[in-house]
Image (cartoon, rainbow over all chains, first blue to last red; front, side, top):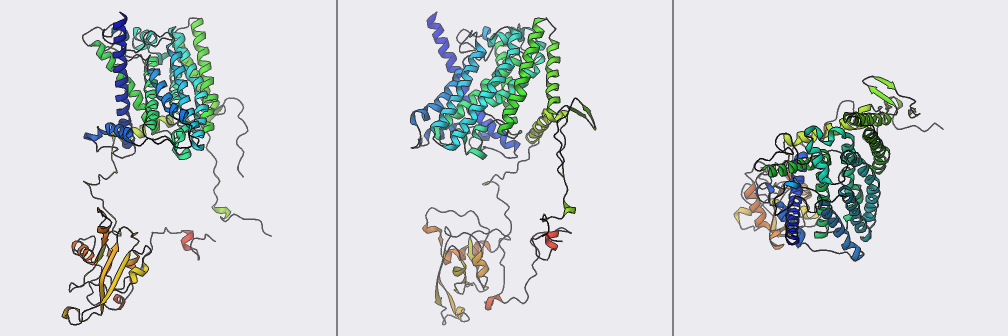
Length: 389
Length: 221
């Protein structure tokens, strides 16, 4: 029993780790090609057919390049930085179910660590530890640009941890569990209308925006913005250590995309082809493919967002978290708790979400609701329209 | 003392105000989705501007300055009269000329006094500014449109007279590198009868204050 359990775990880790690494390598290619297409270029298309061997060339280059450790750095922390970044990203993936867990074949599971009842808490713990990689790396580099980058990263992560955690509390309350697989099966058992996006659209928005900030992706990549900080926290890193940071970042993105799908889009559930009780031949495989396709969609969306939305200024970044997302998330939790307490039907949550969003938008317009030419006054507008002459 | 004035007359100043943000604008959603649609349109309607270089040759502008050549006159002699104007004009000092007297007993050279014994251009030192071309009084040295200049050693990148004449033989039939003058006589400074009229470098729109002002570049009344 214990021996087979051990073996299964090893196989699962091997499959998940290898799959994750290969996926990251090819996602970087996808991102580069997609970025090129958006900018009317070709991107890397020379190595292999349509550039398909580019990740292998990149990997070989990263491994074979001279590994420079500058003389002015704190060596221990300098090496610890990327290690922490990649370790936390990988450890966070351990409880992500990448398939229908209870229908897994006997020789492997669809999750590395099954039945982790504190699931979400664990992921957020590990995810917020990831910022230590960035901070240590930036600080150990002994370079002003690096330190500025890591300072920004820490402020950003501290701010966005809060809406990230608060946004999913609604989902957790509705399911009654922190276990990712339970949340997934809860949605799948209720079919298409059971997906959490229908009852928690605002939570999805807050979660997704905060997740982008947590993964340091554009439009929130202030910790490594090239135009201001050379390379940000990884200015002094080269070859494989730089690659480790990159690897950690991408693993983090994949984790976040899995979370988005599992928490809000029903995981492996899809109407008619992958229902909770569908048991035709190959149903398990179809479910895995459905889940992976959905995740790929989110990853592509994140890539599109990267090349669409310009970077935030730092005060805008802070304002968005503290004045926008956190109040909205707090009110959202309040609505969910009230609805649960008084057994209101689920559609009230949808209405509540939209109401909160509209209210936030109205506050953003200084109490004015501009419809076409008419503007409807919602209370006093602040004295902000002083004429320039 | 007059009051300090802006350099721009008051009548030309248009005061703008930031437009007020509407409800949807302040949620940023229409802008985000509009932007995403724009990004997606570039992928679905893909018109790359990249030139796939080795397969696709660039279409260089006609004034591109590439490898030098030494022109021949209509009798096949090198046009150069070894006057050293180009090597004097050269800011990179990459032209090295050794002059010699033209052999008077040779019937081909009877009408010439001086010619280069050796004419070496270090193509690695050259900054391709085209000043040699400007300085040459007999239109002998010219820059061609050859851009893919490569070599394995520094020595082979020093182009001597034979090599530069060889570049001329290779490029003279290329429509992009026409022989600028067909004059056979190597007269003093290629005697132009009239100077060609020089047009403005760029089109200036009607009513452009800067162009119409007595001192160009200063906007006045």
